[in-house]
Image 1 (cartoon, rainbow, N blue to C red):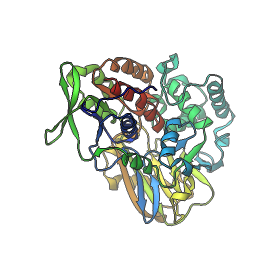
Image 2: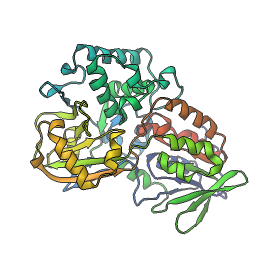
Image 3: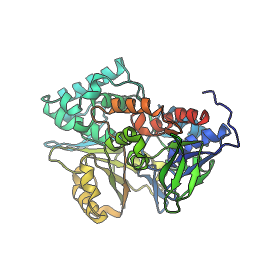
Image 4: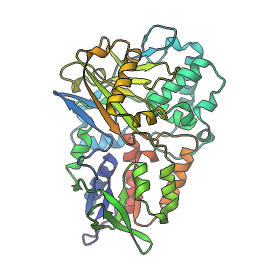
Length: 436
């Protein structure tokens, strides 16, 4: 990208949000010579990238994995001396399905799912291979954007529609098949099946922490509203103090529900878009066990029939052994939309009790009495699911947002979720800021 020269006497570019997208935008602007300030409402950088630490053991309780397709993340981490520390994630999965013993093996062929369900999955993989969708970007909305996974496979083999597909959508999209479009399923299936996975032994939060060390960030500085003058966004007004921070351009890099709250009535279409994004709060139980679990199982899946709350769990010690010095297993239990709405209403104690009740079915090798410590990590918004019509809505938003004077947007929602999607949205926002 050709970067226009900036004038030092101009007001700075203001970036709202110190997640990786906002921090990457600030670094690119700073490298171009543009005065930049990041305003972050909390006391830490990283947003949904969180690494929890206990007694020297670390566990990622937000973003989970780095993929070999993470071109922007790889470049940034190289500059931060982190890329060299990427470690491959290799391990097996355990499926606990009704009517069969727990099955452990490779996801290449899940025996208890039966031949028909596995062949259907191979059919989807073949489709992705023959017509690969772009990764971490949304460039078009096909006819499959209008169809949910549930509707596409309605009436098909029961194991496929009631078990395999719900587990795929839960693990990859944090939503049930009803709230996952077919176009998005193919997109994330390509990422999952055709890229290599990596962990960062320092914990993924080290990435935004190092980025934040290279730019100017004001923490605990929540923005109350945008400042509008003469038909353009001219800055922001801070919450509480009412301080006005003028800007040559504002880049909004926050979760959809936060963006909606900040946008003025004059940007009604953009406000409505963010309001339409399904909110997926996550109350994530983290179980620190007093011992390692046997084998090399990273992920645990349970039969979604019977409507349990937690369908998917990760043994973070097997996923990233370099993060856990004690060698004891650390389990995180994940739910999905709309089940996550139930957990949002529960207290931490109630979430813990529910997770402990479901633990042994989900993770057959574990016992509740082995849990020596429990933590609950809450995210107001964990992951944007892409229900039918979501890709078309994103494209329409991006087209119209390009005409807003003084304001740009950065976020994973514009590229199909995942950290890399947020980073790929940075270049266009930075370009607009530098030509303002």
